Image (cartoon, rainbow, N blue to C red; front, side, top):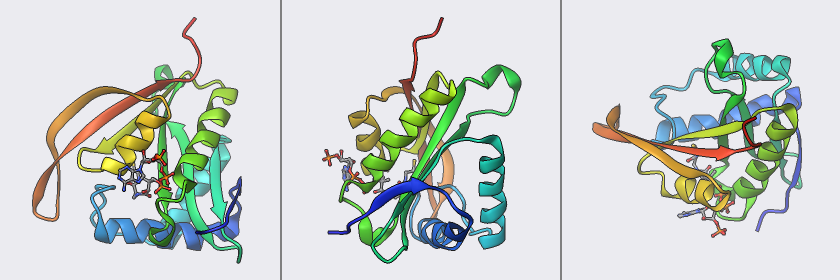
Length: 170
Ligand SMILES: CC(C)(COP(=O)(O)OP(=O)(O)OC[C@H]1O[C@@H](n2cnc3c(N)ncnc32)[C@H](O)[C@@H]1OP(=O)(O)O)[C@@H](O)C(=O)NCCC(=O)NCCS
């Protein structure tokens, strides 16, 4: 079992985050990226998230290594969408199945609600059973499925939409 602590993002996490994401780009359909964009692009992405003040949660292992990361940011850039966010959660392959993804996403849900987001949306590859189950456990409802909208590893992929209310719409 990995021991870990949750904490906010810091710049030194970029290499660890990039290593985790590169793994899933190369070996899974969890992301529709087919090529890893590089550590610098990852740094830019997280700089943007940080500049927005949106939640980024890091799971840090006993040696300071990044075991996972999760964040939430605008679902869409247009202003009318500003109360809806999309979550993202990735756990290092050697650390999956130990509660880390769940712990990080619970923290991100809490922080996103506190920031004023009203709805959180998960956009999940249809074959990602672990992610779908994780979102179900944390109160996300199924909100639709798009058939064969992605193509990776020589096959067509569905996308499942899941949605969780963070605060009642008023
Ligand atoms: C999906 C992911 C974030 C889950 O994180 P994790 O730390 O492995 O999962 P946890 O140990 O916190 O498990 C939380 C819940 O997820 C579900 N789950 C986890 N692994 C699962 C598996 N292999 N099969 C089915 N459900 C699974 C279970 O419902 C579990 O709840 P339980 O512990 O009460 O049984 C992680 O497996 C991962 O990074 N996968 C690859 C990337 C990915 O798919 N990211 C999501 C993109 S939307």
